[in-house]
Length: 448
Image (cartoon, rainbow, N blue to C red; front, side):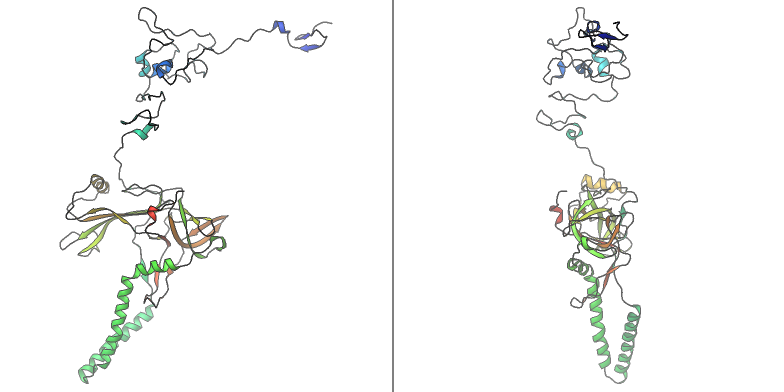
């Protein structure tokens, strides 16, 4: 039987395809196989890697200088692997292609190897590891941090943060107003004026001050109640917010006004305070106040004598998430994109410049100069307030459900606290999304 082309017959008579085994040639290795000595982390023994960083070879290295002082001669390589740019991972100590200037895979001098990189030469750690940045002054073999973490601290900038439209800038001050019917107000004023006129006439004509005393007896308590409401306005609103019952998000319906208490987490845009540089905040504020004495300059047009006035204010709030304590559900609070927000967060004094201590710190001077504020002889206070991620806060707003997404949005109408007769407080209205935070929560933040 004749043998077919490309096939052969075995000893048992079976005809199989392919050439006989004695005709198969041994496959030549395509890559250079060379034993790499163990370096133990010493870059001086790692071949061409040490030369790239300008480190010479010791007498015990496997590359020896030929007599005559010429460059070191590398071991020869098979023709299959000696190409212009040897980028194979198994072609030798070099694990990647050389730079565009190195067109040959031959020896490189110490000067040319260290100057072929455009950036600064990265130092070698004592352990032989290559880090991503310069070493610090106090780095040692026990210091495992690398890169810019070990660098010297750079003076931080206090430039004013510039956010996009996704972050709400609260330019106006918190407004808490009374809403009394204009008709009732005018009727009360007319009755008071008529009582005063009649009382004065009877007192002059008949010498009977009974009506005038009655009018004054009615007018004085009314003035006292108005003054009391203006003085106790904000504290009355905070008392109302604390007593307002918490709602459960699981059973809240669309359009319901609720109060939710829980832990907050940042949204897509975390905030940062401008002076203390506290990161990952959902609300951040920085306010500069100045005290005006008898002949001082006013901080703003409404600044009165012998009082503190706000000279500069930065308040930002963005969208964030809140996890309800009662149900465990997570809701998106829509506080960004220009939403109306009423924050009740007490700021703390971080810089206090008094008459006795007028020496300003360099950081505070830089903060003032970045905002083009003068640092002349003034009594100033810098206050910062923030709500950091992991803080416990309370939100009051309207529930919205959209495609399985639970949201809390600002109400369209102002919220009234109602008339509280035991405290002699008139109805106070708050506009926007109400955001309250415990004054002592900054030290007890839950890590998230």
